[in-house]
Every structure is written in C-alpha cells, then in structure tokens.
Length: 333
Ligand SMILES: Cc1cc2nc3c(=O)[nH]c(=O)nc-3n(C[C@H](O)[C@H](O)[C@H](O)COP(=O)(O)OP(=O)(O)OC[C@H]3O[C@@H](n4cnc5c(N)ncnc54)[C@H](O)[C@@H]3O)c2cc1C
Ligand code: SF4
Image 1 (tube, rainbow, N blue to C red):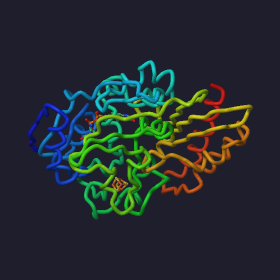
Image 2 (tube, rainbow, N blue to C red):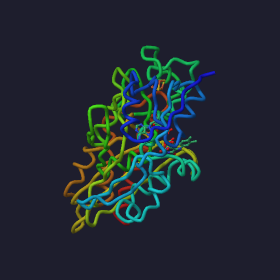
Image 3 (cartoon, rainbow, N blue to C red):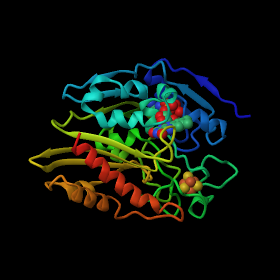
Image 4 (cartoon, rainbow, N blue to C red):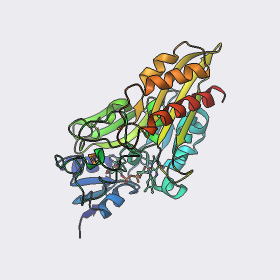
C-alpha cells in the first residue's frame, strides 16, 4: 500500500518552500498540494498519483472572493466551486462562469472542489486511470492505447500522435472566454499567467499539462472588469443531464450593438486537449449581424481544424451545434 506524509503548512511561503523540493510539478510529482481532494485522492486510490508528501492548503488564507481596484474580481485558490457559482458578483457580472460551475459534477463535489483544484483536474481518459494499461501521459513513452481503442469521449482539437485526452473542466472553459489570469507564488517569486498560456497542448510530452514548476502554488485567479452590456451563456451537452462530463460545451460572452456583434469571446469544452478558446470563431463574428447564419459560420470556423478519432467524429457536428445554440441563447438572454 502507498504511504505518504501529511503536512499542514502554516503559511503560503512554507507551502511553496516545501513543494519546491519536488522533482516535478507534473505527472509523478512526489510532493502535492491537496485542496478539496476530489481529483487527487481518487487518483491516489488508483495508484495513478503516488506522492510521498501531501501539503494540505485548506488553512491558508486563500479563500476570499474580492473586487479588484480596476473593477474586476479576485478569486482565492481555495474558494469552493459552489461558493463561487453562487457569489452575487459572479451571478450578476460573470454569469457564464456561474453556469459552467453549476453544470459540473454534483452539489456535494462542488462543495469540496476548489478554484485551483478545478484548474488542475486531470483527464478522464480511462487508460490514464488504469495502471494496468500503457499511457504516455502517465508513463511517458509507453504508448497511447486510446488512439486505436476507446476514444468516444476524447478530443478532436489539439491532439497529437502521443495523446488525445480531453481536458474535462467546465469552469476553465468559462474562464477562457472571460480571459482570466492565474496567479502563482513560486520559489522564484510571484507571476501572473493568462489562462490561454496556462494549460499545454500534449505534443510529445503529454505528461506535462501546465506551465507549473515545483513549488508553484496557485494563490488566486483574477477576472477582468465585466464588459458593459455583454450577454453570456454556457451550454453543456453530455450523455445524461447531471453528474457527467461534457461531450461538447461552449462558453460565450458577446456584446451586440445595433444588431451586430461588437465583441465576442468564445471557448469550447469537451472537444479540446485544453480549454479551447476560439479566435477563429470570434473573428468570423466581429462586426457581423448577430443571426443564426453567422453563428453557424462561427461554429464551422471553430471546428475547422478538428481531427476525428475512430469513435468520436460525431463530436465535431455536436460541438458546432452546441456553439451555434449557445450563441443564440446568449444573443436572446
Ligand atoms: C464523480 C466526479 C464528477 C465530476 N464531474 C465534473 C464535471 O462534470 N465537470 C467538471 O468540470 N469537473 C468535474 N469533476 C472534477 C472536479 O471539478 C474536480 O475534481 C475538482 O474541481 C478538483 O478540485 P479539488 O479542490 O478537489 O482538487 P484536488 O483534488 O485537491 O487537487 C487537484 C490537483 O490540483 C493541485 N492543486 C490544488 N490546489 C492547488 C494550488 N492552490 N496550487 C497548486 N496546485 C494545486 C493538487 O496538487 C492536485 O494535483 C468531477 C469529479 C468527480 C470526482
Ligand atoms: S489519450 Fe492520453 S491519457 Fe489517454 S491513453 Fe492516450 S496518452 Fe494516455
């Protein structure tokens, strides 16, 4: 049985210094922070994660939601998904985020799951979670059985010949459309990472999922000030109505002036190897009439580079319809 040391660092600096002793912050890390535990403890029970030290960060002062001086929002790393979804500012100004959070998991899980933990949740690819199987993400160089095996729920955008796993988060898709920034305190100081640069494409190192280095503690996430008059929607399509991950989802933040789209921010979930912002769809809509024909054109652009696997070609049309409908929902909100 796997044994580990359980520590409760007294402050963020101690947490960072202890975690900085790890060999990696990626797959196989020997030191891990634990927040809600809803991803990490599952993976430890499956022996996919075997850290020697767990650093419980729940007592650190990272649990506040506060307005920023510029009119945006600062969300602490250990803010629970349920508290974030029901916060008055989020419901009013960042509805797409509230909707995305509430579409994820179950009420009990959302009460435990945290902002930082959600950013770092792992793929649900069945081979990744089964140590009897090879998997390049878990054991680099061992192979990717999903490419010739069970891949119905896996990605069609951003894949490589080494990994086709989907990023499963709903929250991250909304944060991508809201252009969130991730704030990290590390061994060399603090830094701010735009969410689009935070997750990595699998390429030939699918074991490396984010830009985090040993010691890096996510302290908070910031959202820019809400865009006046923006309309927002998160639409998630899945095999059953709750307690299920997205087959395709879309987060939309648009502003319409005089019947035309003045500004659009669009991201897709369930189809990409990372939360998938679509500048292609945004460019198609820019300045164009806000109607169904243009929404469909934007969806076609978003999926233009999609590459189907043996079982998941259906996701391409599903994602197009999901985005088209999400845009309609937002436009009529
Ligand atoms: C049955 C089930 C169904 C689910 N359904 C959905 C769904 O439909 N949609 C969805 O989006 N999600 C879903 N989830 C995933 C859920 O959202 C995540 O498990 C959760 O958000 C992870 O947060 P946590 O605080 O529990 O993370 P933890 O398990 O505590 O941590 C996860 C990872 O983040 C690291 N970490 C945590 N905090 C920090 C920090 N501050 N700095 C650096 N590293 C940190 C940990 O070391 C670990 O590697 C589901 C989970 C389960 C178990
Ligand atoms: S898709 Fe990625 S996570 Fe799944 S088996 Fe292949 S390498 Fe592993």
